[in-house]
Amino acid sequence: MLTTKEFFYIIYTDIPNTGIITTEGIFVDIKKVAAQLCSADGVSGDESSASAAALSLLSRYTDDCGIDKFYNVFGKIGNFSDNKPVLLLDAHIDRVGLIVSYIDDEGFIKASPCGIDERILSAQTVTVHGAKKIKGVISTFPPHVKKEGMKDIIIDTGYSKAQLDGAVSLGDRITVDAPVSQLTDDIITASALDDRAGVISILYALELLSGRKLKYDIAVTFSSQEETGEAGAKIAAYNSGADLALEMDVSFAYTPDAKRFQCGEMGKGVMKGVAPSLDRKMSDTLINIAKEKQIPYQLEVMNGRTGTNADSISVTKGGIPSCTLSIPLKYMHTPTEAVDIRDIEATARLIAEFAAE
Image (cartoon, rainbow, N blue to C red; front, side):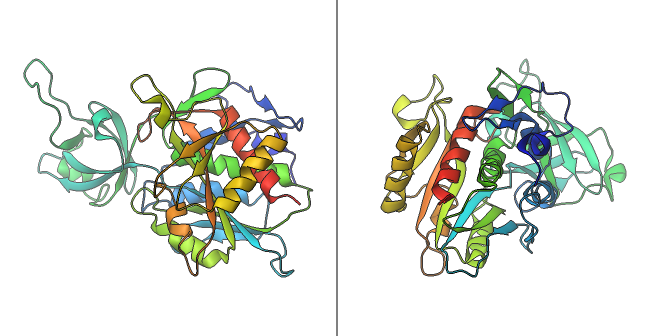
C-alpha cells in the first residue's frame, strides 16, 4: 500500500504542491488528484476515459476492481464472506457536456446539451471527442448586430465537412475547455468537479481507512450517467449486494445571487443530507459521529428526492437505506465549478469514521 503522499503525488506540475495536513497528520495533495480526474472527458454515456482514470486510482486499494458493461467503476474491500453488512460508497464519474447532433454542409457542428448550463456557452472553446480530438469555438454573432441570446449551439472547428468526415460523427461528445486552477490555498476551480470531487472524497476515505478494522465490507462504485437519469447507479447498486449506502455528490454553495438558507457554505464542512427519501437512523449516526470526532458539517434539508444517485440506490432490490454526503460547490454545471478542499477532507473523514469499527 502506498503512503498517502506517494499516492496523491500525481505528475501534474502546473498546480503548486501545497497539500493539506489532516488531523491524522497525513499529507494529501488533493489538487493534483483533481487535476488527473478532471482532465478526463467522460460526458454522460461516454465515460470510458474517466472510468479508466478513476480505476487506476481505486486499484491502489484493492485488486478486486474493474469496469462493468455500463462503464461503472467497481471495487470490493473486505472478505465479503464473514457475514458483515456491505456498505456501498458511490459517487458519479460522468460530467456534463454536449453531444454532436448535426454537421452542416459548411462543416459547422450543431450540438445539444448533456446537462450543461447553456447560459455560459457563448464563445467558449471546446474539444470534440471524435475519432481524434478536435478543438472548436462555439459560434457567437457580435452583439453590435444581434441582441438576443443563442438559439442553437453551433461549433466552428475551422474544418470543412469533408475534413470532418471520419473524424467527427453524430453522437460524439464535446467538453468545454477548462483546466484546474487554484484560487486560494484551499479553493480550486475546474470543470467536472461535479462529481469528481465526490470520487476524490471516497479515495481519500479509503486512504484514511488503510490499516483500520472495518465495521463493514465496502463496495465502491464510481457510477455512470448520473447527469442523464442515474442509470449507472441503478445497475451498480444492484450488483453491489449493498445493505446500506453513502452517496457522495456536490450541492449548492452560497453565492451573492442565491438565497442563503437554500445553500451550504464553502469551507464549513460536509453537507449531511436530511430528506424523506434518506434513512433517518443513518442520518442520526452520521451527525453523532461528526460531533464526536469534531468533523465540520452542515445540514442540507430537502423535502423529497435529493437529485442524487441516492434516489435510485435507496429503492434498488428490496431497498438500500441510504444517506447523502455532499461537498459545497459553486457554479454547478459550468466549466468553472469551485470547491474548497477542506470540505472534501471533511467528507472523507466522515466516511472513514462511519465505516471503521
